[in-house]
Length: 130
Image (tube, rainbow, N blue to C red; front, side, top):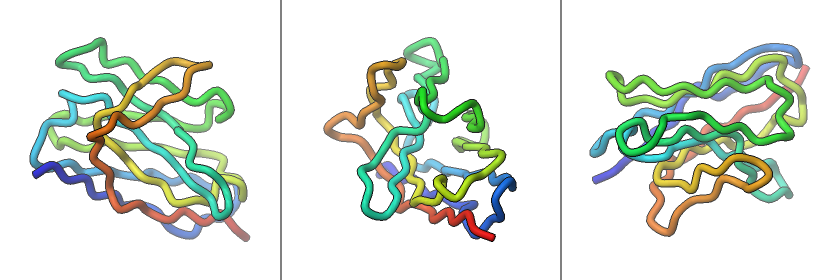
């Protein structure tokens, strides 16, 4: 059974940093395009970043155009874990961050989207507030 479990969210002051983790079990992350989405209250879910499969594709990373370079996505194939480092956090970064596997990981202006049988984690809450 494919599972994803996120961790690392919490309350952070503006300007701070966080590293979110997404641990996979039941499958190898490197075999799928995987990534992070976020959804703030009252807003639609948006793609943050994704990384293509390294076993079936080129393993390249894609970021949403609007994120100003404050996000860094990485994947540890030994630990089978996906990471999202967020720096210079802003209140508007507050959201539930969820990781997902089996994506269409497309470069902007196309949007990253989940494929029909994508696997999702339960999400981790990030609150940026002083």
